[in-house]
Image 1: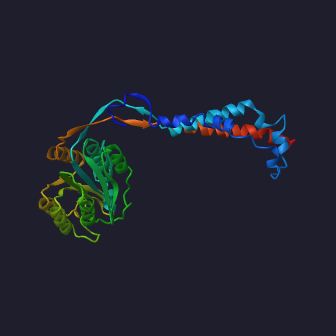
Image 2 (image 1 turned 60 degrees about the vertical axis):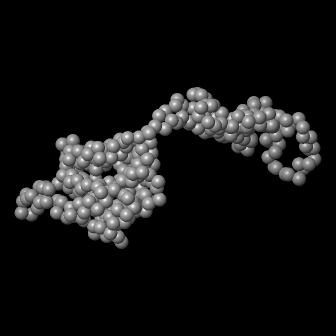
Length: 338
């Protein structure tokens, strides 16, 4: 049904199905009544308790009314009742943006400060990257999580809120404890290769070096460059961290394993940039820069949201049927107990 025909408010998608409402009544009028001797082969020991004058549920007028109401509710559910919302303008950029997030074991290093509290790297990434995702209205955004393996957590979608939620639900070590940077890039190339989007962007965030996987990062970067995929790489981790050991307190570099040269080369070969995030503030600034490098300049698409309401009459019909069944067998149960 075209949007211009619809008006806001309650609507029925398939109103012709409402013509089925009088079907039981018509069948009762048209079809001949069955003769009592046709059912003599069915022997039910407790039939007298159920069909008797005192406990006969077939003789109860209220049950016939409930059955009719259930039928009408089922017909209404089949006709697809809907609530049609107001016309909305949705930005559409034609850009596909994948976010690849490292969830290897090293992301559990607590060298970041968030709200004056020491937290691990992934928690800061969840907050900052989640806000970045939700700002990308009009982009199709996807999420890749990688450790020893890389897998697609969220396919490309305009539903940025769900993508941010799934990022927030990710856990360290879910994909293994090592880091497969090359596989993450390779998976992004595979997912974006056949897309017709004008701009295809990968933001890859990691805190280490490639220690796992089947594809080397630089080789994957070459594949990405040939497919026109721009990669922005982000190295996460503080330069200094106080640790306590047997000899007392000392300062260490928790980011000693970060392969900045490889991340910088990956970005340069694909036309992107490399960024260094040493704390939550710098990471937030990086994502603000990414917003400037990949601005959201979009066309506007007009949509009219439609919420399906069939589950309401369907649920009420189910509840009424269950209640009628319980009430109809109650006299029989009481008769057996007596």
